[in-house]
Image 1 (cartoon, rainbow, N blue to C red):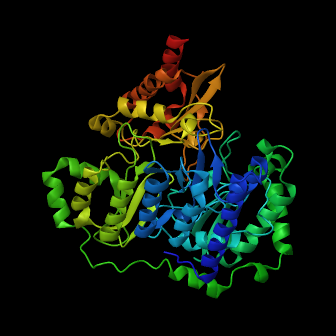
Image 2: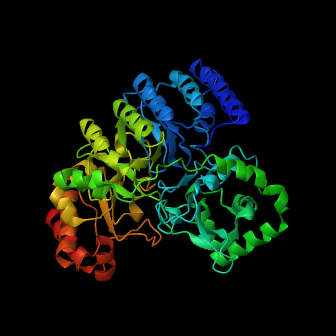
Length: 556
């Protein structure tokens, strides 16, 4: 993991001291809320429906046990004993008191964490594949790139007041687990077919929200050494030409759409040619220094398949199912990457209590080289687990209510906080997720359905990524009543697609029935082991829309 140097540590402490003074002036009335707002947003502090909310950056989703224990302590001491993991690998506390936030920031600084650039019109927390460094389909670990971008973008003087927020995601694998095509900039590490050199495919203009768009490729093979200069060229074009008169049209995706990807690319390449690359790009020695922090741990030499694991699975089908669903193969023989579901039936998706966080920290320390990851799907990952240790981990997770075998299944629902917390929301999302989870709680039913992603947003801002859910649910307010619009066919992977609307909005209580009708169409029409999303692509919306309309007409 990356460790702060003296500059990082001093910089974060100075920001804490600066914000402590700003909070003090707000509390004694020297600053109005309007004056205070831009200052708090620079430090990840939002004012939500019921209280302030603090958003903490988890760069590229990587945490140590010490850091997670500190988050558990903060949740217990300054919040209500839990935290909420978000769809951008951050963690949010929903109930901190403003007077306590400087103390919280000091505790975060103690473990090399902060909240800088988790809000505001700047480059936000850089996200990455949660299986970075361990995925078998990976060409190169994307985290050194993400860390380089984090350092380059932190308080960048030219890009601290952009037209709108700006999000960057990086993957180093063939299979996109970082949703790069739904980001302002998406980077994919790939090999050049002629030279075999590792380079970047650069996409720009992806994003969800009010106007969902899939990112467009502007460079197929960017040499790694040119990364920062090329990013700077993109940011300059956006910063100069992005709209500032209408915040709904201010994201870079709108600029790309309005002038066309060819013209946008031409302007970027023109700016890139003007830049003095060597003065912008990172010193190779610094790149190498950063990379050393992501050196894989020393793995034991193990057989590819653990006999202990296989024997235990043979005598315990519940455990075997959990291994099948919640683990993926690892680069190192005899190891697995384990996803811990934060979606037990009936719980708010992405929430973890302080006790659960401490347990996961202990497990990471004992079984995963003291490292864990946060996923954009609001789960946690132990990336370096010996196969023979999986049973012991499963037992301990079970005692804490964290052994749900549902990763990627219909109950592994991504959901924003919605109207239960968020000041921007127009409808609840957590209760909808819970109702669907209860409807499909039966493990055999989930197994029968197979992989199916449901994503729920409580407003058009789409923090729940509903546009790219196999089934997307968008909550809206319609004449004072919550109404839920359902979309089908979205995809967050390398085959990124925006889902299409099935019909009129439904009342909250009718959503589970509609989902069940849609699922039934799939189960009856699929061919062999065909996945839900593949069946939707083959069948088109027709049969699903017909089933949906039966529910819509019944409640009309």
